[in-house]
Image 1 (cartoon, helix red, strand yellow):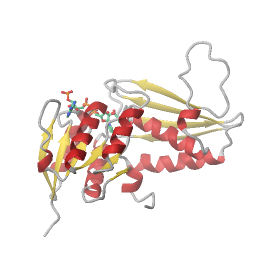
Image 2 (cartoon, rainbow, N blue to C red):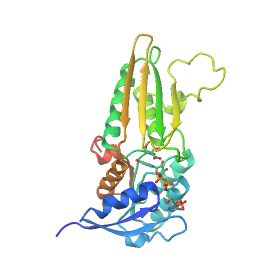
Image 3 (tube, helix red, strand yellow):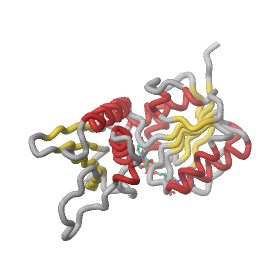
Length: 249
Ligand SMILES: NC(=O)C1=CN([C@@H]2O[C@H](COP(=O)(O)OP(=O)(O)OC[C@H]3O[C@@H](n4cnc5c(N)ncnc54)[C@H](OP(=O)(O)O)[C@@H]3O)[C@@H](O)[C@H]2O)C=CC1
Ligand SMILES: O=C(O)C1=N[C@H](C(=O)O)C[C@H](O)C1
C-alpha cells in the first residue's frame, strides 16, 4: 500500500500557496485536505502536515494552534519574522515537528555552505562581505529571509553572530566601511522571483557567489519535499539543511 498523507495549505490563495497547490495536486501520494487563508478555519484535525507561506503573524498563530493540540507538523516559509516571533516558533517546536526556512531551493541551500566556507577562509580584516538581493515589487519584507540566511552563513564562517556584524544600510555620509562587517542591500523591481548574491571584496580581487530562482515552483517543490520529510518526525525545529541531509543529527 502506498504511503498517502494529508496536507494543508496556509496562505492558499497567495503566490506561493497557489504554487504549492499545483505541486501537491500533481502528486499521487498526497491528499490536499485543507486550503485556507486569512479568517478561514485551518482544519488542523484533517492534516498530517501543513505548508504555510503567509505572514509572520499568521505563521506564529498557526504554530501555536498546532502545538496546543500536538499536531499537525508544519513547514513554514514565511519570512520577515521578528526575533520574538522566531522564539515563538521555537517554543511551538517543543511540541510538534517544524521545518522553517527562508528558502526551500536545493541550489540556495548549497550556496549557504559555499558562503560559510568562503567566509571562514577570507580574513575579515582584508575581505568585506556584502549580501545583495532583488525581488518582485510586491515583496513586503527586506532584507529577504534568504539574504539573512546567507548573512548568517557568512557570520558563522567568521565564528560570529550576524547581529554583531550586521551594518545599517548605507545612506548619506556614512564614513568608511568598518572592517569585518556584513552589509545588506535590497532591490525591488517588477516580477523578479528571487536573486541573491554574496560579494566578497578585497583590495585586489572580488569573489561573487550567486543564485537565481527561475520559477516560483522551485520553492513549492522544496516545501513539499520538506512536508513529506517532516510529517512523521519527532518534535523539533528543522531546516532545509536537515531535509536535504546536509547536517548530521
Ligand atoms: N521560504 C521560501 O522559500 C519562500 C518564502 N516566501 C515567503 O512566503 C510568504 C508569502 O509569500 P507570497 O505567497 O508571495 O505572498 P502573498 O501575499 O501572495 O500570499 C500570502 C497569503 O497568505 C494569506 N494570509 C494572510 N493571513 C493569513 C492567515 N492568518 N492564515 C492563512 N493565510 C493568511 C494571504 O491572504 P490575504 O491576501 O487575504 O491577506 C495571502 O493569500 C512571504 O513571507 C514570502 O517572503 C516566498 C517565496 C519562497
Ligand atoms: O517573497 C518572495 O517572493 C521570496 N521570499 C523568500 C525570501 O524572503 O528570501 C524566498 C525567495 O527569495 C522568494
